[in-house]
Amino acid sequence: MSDLIRLPGEGRKLVTKAQEVTFKATGAQGSSSSIFEVVVPPGFDTGGHYHEEAEEFFYILEGELELLAFEPAERTDDWLDWESADGDRVVRAPAGSSMFVPPNTPHAFRNATDRPVRMLFQSNPSPEHEAYFEEIAEIWAAGGDSVDPEAVRRMRSRYDVKQITPMKFAPPATAPVS
Image 1 (cartoon, helix red, strand yellow):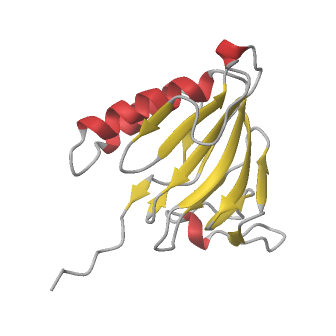
Image 2 (cartoon, helix red, strand yellow):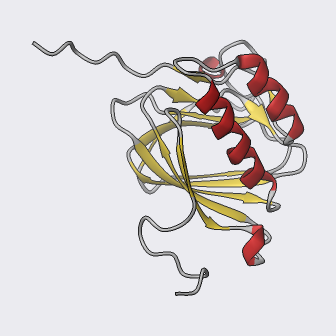
């Protein structure tokens, strides 16, 4: 079958404890955008950030995310408390919701639920985010039970990710088996 058609579950897959990313359309296929299916585990938070060049689009297929896409009146240490000059705040977004992020727009998402969230993610231009996902998967794989925040910061700076608040991953505690 042509690599221009992807059936469910098909595509190159990168799996870490913090994200599962399946490549659906890439620069190698001639696409000017990179398109991914992303599974966001409970407790994952991208942290507030922006891109000077890239634009992004997120579409929630299953589950619910907390989303933010605006310049806050004041940048603080926790993007969940941000409010824009017009009164915009973080939105709890269920399946069917989308978020478009133009260049230079602070944005973030977090899975505050106890279930994985599945979303479609598009980044333009290609292949910047393809290389980003490959490198962050290596950092997560090398980290064991934790990830080196300095390695993430250095890596993100190479991929047009201007971090404002830290990326976090705090999965919910599981109940002990009796």
